[in-house]
Length: 162
Image (cartoon, rainbow, N blue to C red; front, side, top):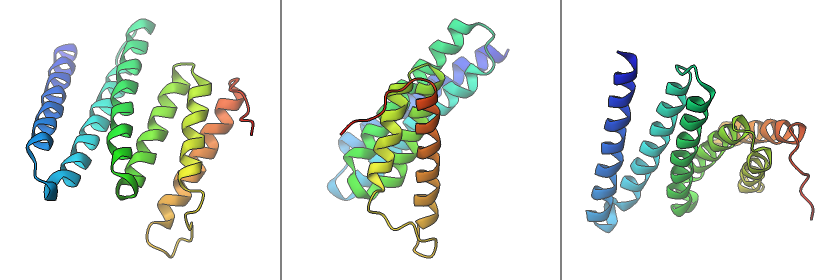
């Protein structure tokens, strides 16, 4: 049964998050960054699982609930990656954009726009030259953030002032 399989997958992801949190709490300084990246990635994977499971739902309320739960997990991923600073910049901005897409899908264009602006700000001074390592990521994130911001504005998000 598909519903039971989805419930089992959610339970396993919940256990994975708990294990990552326990490992991070017990870790020494040398392992903390790697384990924090793992925790953030696990939150993101959990959010993606919840989003995919929403596509199998037929009731609007169930879809909305799944997207809201996914947004909560993605927001946790953003927070974990943000705490790591520059070491997890691309992970944070990827999670930030995913959260923004969820907010747009949930009818929250102002919040989606704020996430898009946060990504653009994060890369304001980054060199987007394709030849310098992760310039492709910088360019892709800027492009996606710009598209998300435009979509949010079309959906009624207020323009930023200042």
